[in-house]
Length: 339
Image (cartoon, rainbow, N blue to C red):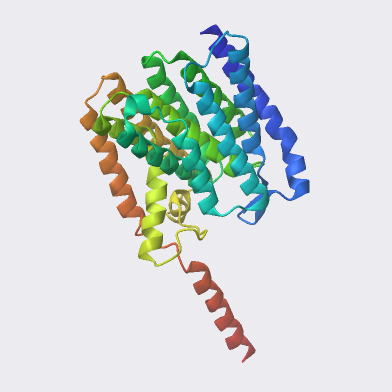
């Protein structure tokens, strides 16, 4: 218990410090993402990954807080996915490469002896889905980090309920590292999570969730895991349905994500993040109650129903063609004035 508190405190401070130190080199090297026409350096994710791995490995090496069976491999696989994401931040890898790499890493960590082959294959697909969901959440300041902190706490509670102390400590360290990073990522963000940090966070949380539900029924596990990661899944489904309906490429970047649509409804950047965090907390809280037996697993259906309602409502928010219309109107006005 004491080590967990000390480890989380160290992770928070180290991540905040390292994120601040990496900001300038990322800016000078040109490794930036552009949001609202301003450059956001992308090495904040590297700070989260390095600090999480360093603090977790320190507990393992000193035997003060051993990670436990399979957790070390999980962390190693997550670090591999993070490295792939770092390459994507620097050299812009194709999305299919990220998907394939994440799938390979997921296939290597799923506990098939507890899940079985068929359920294990579903678990691999779920890990990839959630990982990409967190990658997609990194479209607004503070969003992926805030949802990641809430999800890490929720999955950590589930792990503690299963007596997986090493996994619970690892998730608390991740939550603390993300909190330190958020000190620089709240709007207006001074550094971003990037593919490195978002893929690492999503992979680690999804795989940890699979570990905690290994041995349970497939249906009940799917319900609990969905609730724990509802916002990440909601955003990914929202974007996919919207782009398919508009006959746009699924891989083409567009301002059609969750926070983009909330902003078009009049919310501030901070308001969109806070509202999304409230939704994430509701899902995580329900998932924890269902996992620990304090609530019926059918209560997760309320989360699913709420997510479906949000998707249907946000699909009605216009997000495509606004810039083209605006530019065409300006051109028309200029022609009229010149005439």
